[in-house]
Length: 362
Ligand code: DAV
Image 1 (cartoon, rainbow, N blue to C red):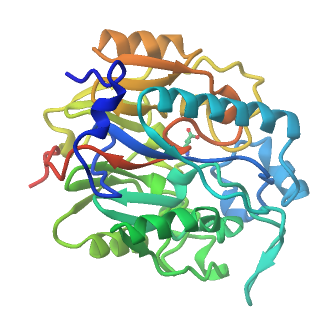
Image 2: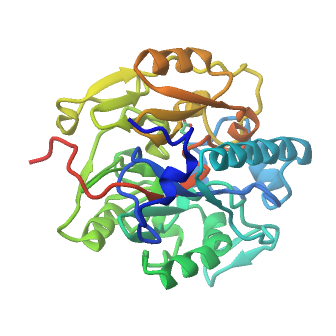
């Protein structure tokens, strides 16, 4: 039983390494919260076809590299500030990325992009496993330099003792795209993954194959982490698969919130209580450029009993409360517009706890 909300100082007592995070639910002490400031529409590439909403395709084709709509962006930034205030109110240290110019076009000898994207979703790009920060090799070309906004943070964590593991820089040439096995948008040309296709359960990680994560990338991460960690690929039923964190949400040891259709039972969750998330409440006409309304279940755990949930997702709040959780409601619908919710926009760099074993793996 933690009382950290009432006793913010409790978290400051026992010193922990600069980076220490093994699960999605242990008591949170420090977190990176992304920033959408200066964000631009992604330059279109065919591998986005199966993951972005229909209405977004012509927009990205036409407006790739152009600023995201100012009014919507401002509303989303205000919601991010609201999240920061709530986290700080719980005694959690919040750090933010650097401001970088996302409008600058760039290229390699093989391709070019009319601009970057944003620094809004550190979960997509970075993964903390224990004392290591991993930089993901992302397959959307517009995201090739996304790490720049986080580099001073990563260097600072490194100087304070964290391990720093950038994946091999992907070339992102045409061989990577189109006609991947089983209909995936990426081939096995080189290792690629988005960090958000992984979830952490102590010494075990769970990952889904997706339109941005290939087997080569999963193998790279498995070998980079070494024998102290296990990586299990789980099947999900999601033709648009990109990021596992609106499909599975482990909220505490033995408690797994799932998308009612995408979840495919797997033996690693033997002994876990699995409950379906209620449908999202987002109005149909709400602008959504990147993802589905199911980011409603993209919650952030502050500890095994406390979750940050979108304020208007009342059915989810009721379901979680009934399950024994304390819900912290935060307005976040404008952030949804740009591709994620509380789990996506954060990177939990410091949580209490160590490398436990929680899954039914041999
Ligand atoms: O439901 O569209 C969203 C994942 C956000 N990173 C979805 C998946």
